[in-house]
Length: 310
Image (cartoon, rainbow, N blue to C red):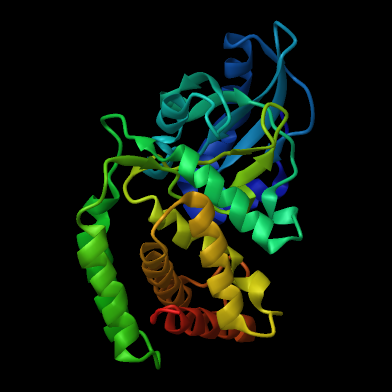
């Protein structure tokens, strides 16, 4: 019987309430059942991400792997479909799946992430190269980013009207234009959907492999926006923030072989979403107080900075 990490249990209940508590009560038995079915034994301490536990295991053939069991949520449903489509190309291999349990047996990689690399150019370059490799024709049945466009625009307009802010009108107009011009007609390409440095891990089979995909169909440039958003706070010490931000765009887009302007526009959209999200819900790094105010103002600044070409 595995021990559920306390931090993971606490955050799951905070986020999911009674449903999370009920799932946590069943989780040790679920893991035990899957270990037996897939012929595995635990081989290390239980780890966790934001929505699931990761159990290092050894299979009957002595191959190392990890068992991942996620909280049942529609946002996690297509992760194994993405792994099947990539078949190890830039991503961890999928060995087994149980969609009803939101469980997978995956290739084991190292615990070190790309976020630990000190060279910012290298982070953007590795992420860009992986983005290019992951951008393959999408299999049928996966959720399409274009289907979210109407909801994106509606939420942006509601946030701009309902929440206190001092953002220039052109910042909102630019994000809405991105939704209308890039969001509603997107290529039939498989994309990660949440590409950032903590979702890129060192591996043995290849230097770096991605984990935790959403399995969306859409514009590969969309993930350039998720990467830059995740890198934003690391750029605070830059002497020239505008120059540092656009350096990330330059390196990523060259490595990913993408149109730089599309990536900039998606990055501006993501930054404005984050600015409004922080006002409504807070951030993981701060839920309230002066630090939340500071983070929200920084998100505003980033969205405004990305509104015009450079």
